[in-house]
Length: 402
Image (cartoon, rainbow, N blue to C red; front, side):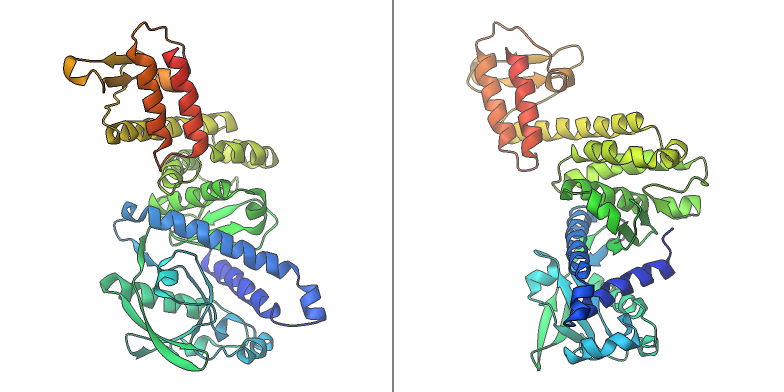
């Protein structure tokens, strides 16, 4: 279960690992895995940012996300602080990582920059009492909340220390929805959401080898946050919930899966990835899934139904941009309508079974083949459509035109 105590512990573990990476000799040899941990953290941050920013309009009160991963003295146990202080970390909030293409990246913030003021207000004393013997991420969270509040009103002017000198950087956040993704050490393939954060275990990160699959895991948890499932069922939402949960969890999981497909589609990820991930992971979690989730077959059926809806909408958008009008018609597979005014650019109407079932259609209309080729070109030119989806659509259209 993800709660703030465990979340802060996990985040502190990550930054402590980063501190140990600054060591040398046996310390470095003993913590080689920390480099992989930092790499996984950066990968998750990129996927999370891409999902949250692409779906910023889905929240009534979106967060202002920056793409910054920060650390401070309170993030480390006392025994580790000398390492980060030797690297120049003071009582401000230093940049540990920047998501490529994020608001922070566009603003020019760099790794090791230390933020000491926001809009002229000193932040080095913020939460100073939290700098204790044990590591905690609470002080960084306080800073992030303060920064989010300011960015909701206007871009913020950050005073940054870099290379012994101070400079001012203007930061304008991006609207984000779904929560902040963070990595949590763990040997189980799992993920959680608590309304504000999404935590993914290191094992889940390893199993989701492709970013498209990882995006589905993160999006599923973001969907729980967006749909307020934690507030409605009184517990933490989870990709693989524990068996002792309310009966309504199955419906919540269905809703989260369905919205997750729309979230990853909006962010440009491959919508066929969820099926691959579910088929690979489900056998290992059969006992939990059988009680808390729909069957694997049903779950795949539901996500693919949403995928087909998304594909149909994308095709219609592609045709409209190319001067065509796609309108699925019940009982008909492919209709080409032409008049003297539209002889070169006929109006094409398609039904879902012609596109998705690959049913053959025999047509004597001489314009069908040429029109289909133009449809294929239109679909391939659609930036929102993944190459694998475009190929699948093209094959279906070719079959329909034969």
